[in-house]
Image (cartoon, rainbow, N blue to C red; front, side, top):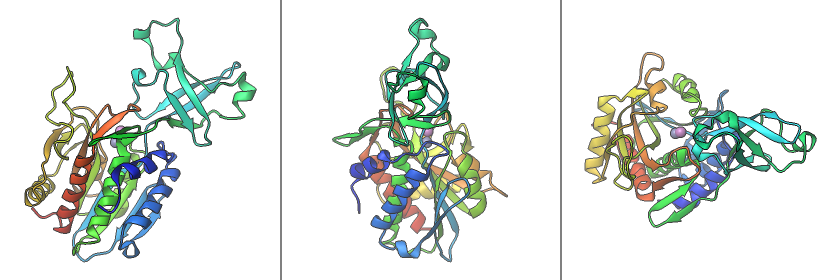
Length: 341
Ligand code: CO
Ligand code: ZN
């Protein structure tokens, strides 16, 4: 690997990038690509109207699109009361239990704590009963720091412990990191794919960026990289075959997509050839960019490689470094063979 996974993840997670406000994370990704990909001179890149950051390296082979969303979940301020407390709406799917007493940060550095109206029984709390406290004495003081319409994200320091990394926005900064790794690996390979790598915007609010990115590219094949749930915690409600640390997951299906069988076969063949452990993923809840990419224009043969992740959309998402490394190797090899099984 040409870069350290945890150190790079720390850099990416320090960037600000909730859905619709991806400029900060796009900047860090551009810098990272410039510093880690040896043949970056062969790539060009641009940002489209939705904030998708799209890289292209021209080739004579099949047109392949790799995609990872760079936006994270967050909150947006909807109201500030006369005592300086703010109300907010969710940007992407949040769970109340993940929010109470959590710190958030705004793009301008302002920090706050989420709390709840104590008179409402804990089990009956809805988003309407939550508020954000930035320590302001009144509305006037609060508005010096934040305005209605300002976005904020979880504030939390990532850590590494053995093979595990933990922090907010592994979803989907580790997908972005994986694709930077794939580009770096491919710099050492001889391949002819006409390759596009899209860091997409607004996935968390409905797979929006991938829709325009895929339409602009109209690839023959596509692979999206994102996190997926695991079934390996105590007393999970629904069984799931995916575990942490047992290899990247090759998606078969989720709520948004049934993956293309040729792409799936090419990924399995690559796994076998490179002796990489892989898992079979069916995620019963949630979707991915693959869903909209597949249905772009006249249709795209699309699949997905997922990084098994616990506690998705909480401030403490957890994944395995070896799964990320293996995902990089797997995708790079499969692409170098033109996704031919
Ligand atoms: Co997500
Ligand atoms: Zn995601």
